[in-house]
View 1: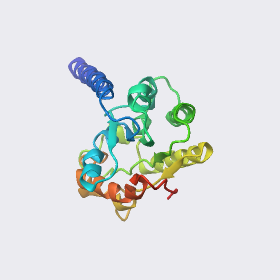
View 2 (view 1 turned 90 degrees about the vertical axis):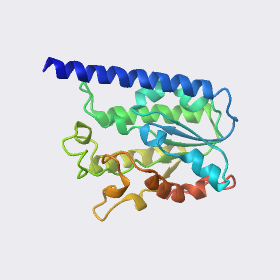
View 3 (view 1 turned 45 degrees about the horizontal axis):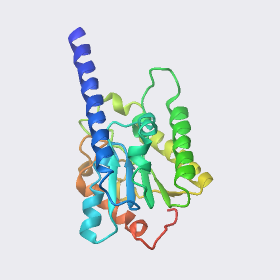
View 4 (view 1 turned 45 degrees about the vertical axis):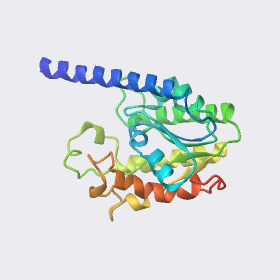
Length: 231
């Protein structure tokens, strides 16, 4: 039992170190990017989105990716300069908070914590990046039937029901702050409303083909001329 506990602690320490390295790398990259471009920011589901490649291939405006796997809203707030402010974006697409959908060691309700932190992020955007278009993206569905998802602790709270609940919170927050809420998930879902099996690596994370489906639905919002409407 102690060996298993030690192994898990080592994994956690390695993951934390990896996030620290990635943040340092992004901070350095921010010195060399073109300011005033489109920014995609969030956690692993954003980090793995090949948005820069898609936009480059389609002749769309530059889109920088500032996603870090494993990030929670707490991590995002602590790193808000590297993840959001330093690139001085002209337009922001944000998807952060799925990693908050876990039991909390401090006993606080995960949904209350996520809601409060996302509000703080929205306030920072409003105050520090006024007047730019902000697109708060709906959380993607999951597939609990995937072999790698069955029995996974990550799936205890990260259910499609809780994702829908969190999406309603994000939608209301976007309306309150005058941002755009966009749900481009329809092409990702099977008949049961789950993430399509062929699209997912582990029931949560997605292959490039799935991101291409998302990209096609995001295309109207990526045009330099289009501000976009809620969908």
